[in-house]
Amino acid sequence: MAELPLEFLDSMKQLLGQAYEEYLACFSEDCCRGIRVNTNKISTEHFRRICPFPIKPVPWIENGFYYDTSVNPAKHPYYAAGLYYIQEPSAMTPASLLPVREGDFVCDLCAAPGGKATELGAKLGGTGFLLANDISHSRAKGLLKNIELFGLQNAYVSSESPEKLLAQFGSVFDKILVDAPCSGEGMFRKDAELIKSYREHGPSYYSPMQKQIILTAADLLKPGGFMVYSTCTFSEEEDEEVIAYLLKERPGFSVCDIRNEGRYYEGFYEGRQGLSDCIRIYPHRMKGEGHFMALLHKSDSAEDTSKINVSEKTAQRFFNESMEEFFSLVKTEFPKERIFLKNEEVYSVHPKVQVPQGIRFLRTGLHLGSVKKGRFEPSQTLAMTLKAEEFSNVWNLSSKDERVFRYLKGETIDLSDVDIRKGWCLVTVDGFPLGFGKVCGSLLKNKYRAGWRWM
Figure 1 (cartoon, rainbow, N blue to C red):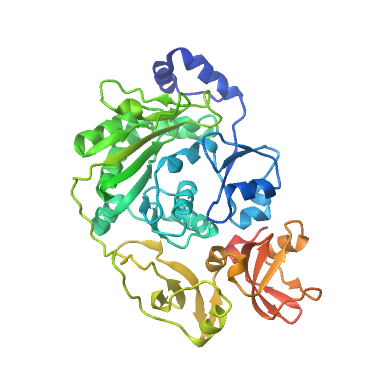
Figure 2 (cartoon, one colour; figure 1 turned 90 degrees about the vertical axis):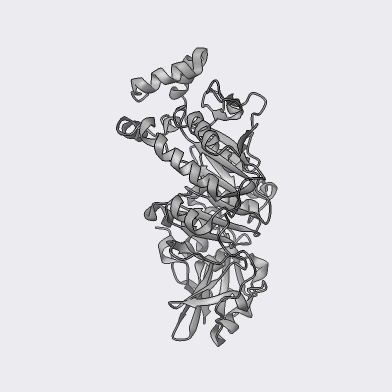
């Protein structure tokens, strides 16, 4: 076991009392590893039937599973097809607690690398709107890839401060998730590097930042909306004290009871009404790492400061002959009035979101492809949003076919023994899209995105 900071150990003794020794003992146990099924692409039941490696259910997550350490899920083609996200089991919990409904406007305010945002997007089921934001531009790039891998059509990705989002959007979101930056105490068992970081920046460094973030998130929320605040730390200074600060500064908020039959420890902050309804996950109580969560409700009578246009709008139309030819193969509709061209890139915009000015976006709409010298080339992003039955020319491969791995490496593939029409085709693995290729003679010209290719 790595040497733990004394101030951390002292705080855990106070929190856990008689359970303290039990908590310390868990550091000698192996960490749990998990995957979360992308229900935007496949049902949990279907995935269980086809999963190529042994899995066991995470008891408190309907679409979460443990996998054995001998397995590397990232090296299976189903991962490239976006059928699951590799995620620590406890980290699956915050998104599962946010009561997202189809048609909601949802914001994940501190979203990178995307584990929670992808689940929120899947829960929307192709409806509503998801804004996935991370203030770090480099981390937001990884977030964007995971959003695209999951095939989420209705998501925009931004890299801005919460305050700037508030200035442009106002209180427009039905549901918000704030997985706040924190000291990481709950992950000490999993990642010893976090202990080094903790010695430099402990709870007192993060708490003021968290208080500012949660107030801004509260103002982004619609009256009547719900917000989950979560951290992967045990510190009261970063957890209950932040919730108490919100309740003091925004009296229209209340804490919802999300305790579940003793599976979690209750919140520990004494003398504050309602804070016992917060929950913690402890690694000695559940098969996962450490997390804190609170579900918050904003009063219906709170002020509505929504600033963006959420009525039907018309985009700058763009459609050329090459696009007409390609989209004749697509069996799902992309309305022309929502398609526009920007710097040779073609997008389908959300029908009810007028994009605010001055926000640094990595994606504003679904990237359909590129137009160069009049020729349209579909994007990897578009391929990941389609279903096999939504494209007229499909080459389906078994996950055990070595040509799947050659495709994922970006190789040109011999099709002399394959009966398939020339032109654009959608390459799938066991019926799930991986990307596009172009059939020329007896060869498949590989169009799998260069930055995603397997080594």
